[in-house]
Length: 586
Ligand code: NAD
Image 1 (cartoon, helix red, strand yellow):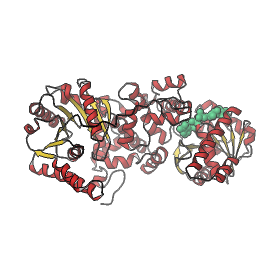
Image 2 (cartoon, protein in one colour):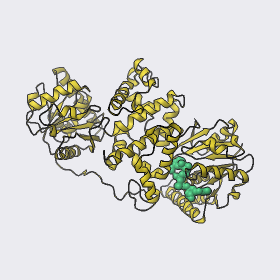
Image 3 (spheres, protein in one colour):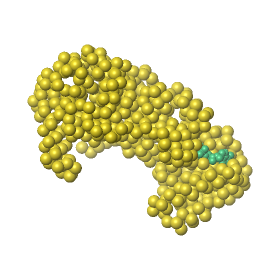
Image 4 (cartoon, helix red, strand yellow):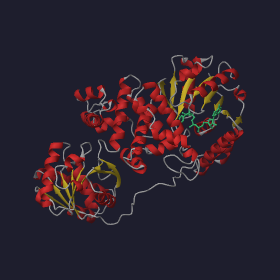
């Protein structure tokens, strides 16, 4: 069926974006709202967005005017009578949506296709509110609809395949990629996204880390375009609350129940950007500009430490030695054998050579940096260090022995730090005589490139040590975020359960790794889908981190998915073994 004229019901955050892209693709649009005031707001929103596209040179004034002229507005549903497709984008309440569809059924022609932009509600419930359940689909755009490439195309048990095909062609005509999904709460992207957003909300509510640090962690640690709390503000906290509710109703998993803080914000009228206040305060409603954000110093000049010890000779150790030496610190790297020390120094040399060949560093500078790194086999050579960063194998017994050695070898005021990504920092603090000066400094791999460092304080670490180390991380050009000593810290705690959920979703036959990866890249702007990411991280590493999260929290969601477990046993570890969720030509 050919679609020429499109109706849109609701001209809020999503409805206005949908009107714009549909009109931009050349279709005539009629948009319906509950009142003239709401229509005015919607029209202003569309105008602002279209003007922005002109300012940015993405379209010219004549095109913009023609686009606006293709959008007719109405407060009477009867005016949608002549449309071939009607997309509903009213608030996320099932009764309201059912009412809208029942009313549309009375005014629209028998061939008209109905689409709902619901993020989480069962499409079948809306379909059966009409006399044309076979002509009702879910057509789930992502916010902002003008930008995000994904449309989840949801079919119910009643959907006619021809209707689905027409909807798919229409999506492609808008320049979108349609991923087919079954009618299950959250479809693909939100089913993976919202438990993660909900966890981040709880993490903030528990005072585990600040809003800025949670958001910075996911942007810098995972390359997400927005942190979870900023994203919730963009999506709207009322819609987010309803989506979590819908997930909970369908799956009855306590983890999906909306975090209490979400409800409090919604009741208080803090709906996110659209109301000018959510997790953050904005310049005015609809503005993206945060006015109460706290940014880290960034301006710290001079390192509070001069001599840095690094224990270990692997990738992390050599990376950290390089970063500290680059920032002007004297570095003493301690390894177990001449051969491993040589390897670590060669790794630094190689990385510096690369920087020189790319013109980022001159040779004299590179030589100076390398000259600042001395190596040793003896712990006693670390005696004068101000801080020692341990970066050896992720094994509690090995790390414990090293902390005992460090406690004996270093001066009493020396700070002892571990780069562990999954062990409890306090276990290491407890074997020293200076638990107040022990903390976690969790660098990300590769350390010379990744900006983020999680500064982890235990119950025993003094605030002074935390602040001094935060300043040091700042001084060596990294972005420090502070959190408490709990499995997964910020990034892994939020990331790995999400990866595990993706494996479960695939295991249940709900989506292929390709579709799920496409949904998260195109719908959420993630640089990589969960399966691509697990293949890089290693399925064995993913499994081990989930195990440690499960061990600490004992929640079912963190227990490694059976498929992941089997793949690890089969030796399908990801890129490093040539096969993971994808096959890699060797
Ligand atoms: P919103 O609150 O910004 O907009 C909803 C609009 O619908 C408002 O302008 C309201 O006046 C209007 N409305 C209410 N009742 C109506 C009626 N009976 N007839 C016509 N208009 C009516 O909400 P939103 O964020 O645009 O969400 C709309 C839908 O899109 C929801 O189902 C939501 O789950 C879904 N969605 C939202 C996002 C997001 O990120 N916000 C992304 C994808 C899908």
